[in-house]
Image (cartoon, rainbow, N blue to C red; front, side, top):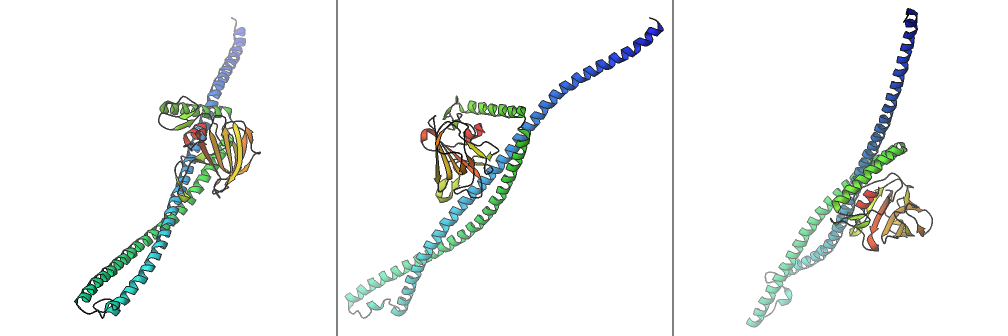
Length: 363
């Protein structure tokens, strides 16, 4: 090759190298870009799950604090009633004891004025017996008064401690409520930002299905709505009752005012968050003193599902399809100030069972 041709070939070789390098670089960037997108989706899913876990822990702490407050309030009320009853008994005993003191003072050494003036050995013997009975009765009355006074003092001390514990529980509940609401708000912000990505949704759903399969394997269930081998009721036929951000824990059996026990799962969510039919069936809208604005779904699968504390209904009583909006989260009934859904499952329309496992699997 002539020197002239060699001079022409060098620029072409350089250009070819640049083009090849650019193509290789573009391919690398493309591959890197796909990995970066997947990695970002994984991170977003992990961030959402971490926020959900934080919100669930905070909600559990809040509902636990509420249960403790209810228990202490019940104890305080019972002690207050007992103190009032003992005060009435003690008051009457005090009158009796004062009368006995007067009688003893008036009767002198021998006892009771009504028995004085008796003469003769027979009458004297009768008087001695009556005086002995009177003395024993007086002593019994004094002993009873002393016992009641001691018990009353103890109940008053316990009532004082109960009041202090209740006051502290009120503060603890208020603090836990603030934390739960803060974590729920943060969860809402993260889900609003991250859940727009379909890949993130797919990752979270895959994780939910994996957890559900693991739970089914441990419990020995084969799907549907049934009691597992370990006694846990699992209803895999339902969808999550709340369409939106929510936080909840296992509140089954927690003490409630009036000596009741909690028969559902409480799900913390913002007022107005949509509620959907967990299963297809007949919807009945109603109002209760404790549950406030409420809904029953008599599902086609035989179960009854109960929603309480709604802010309002979506439409009248009717036949609904699974996933159809039936109302909105609120704080009606005895939930004033704490918007949440109280949700129950009653298999075959019977007694309520712990709905937490089923709701955890669905949500």
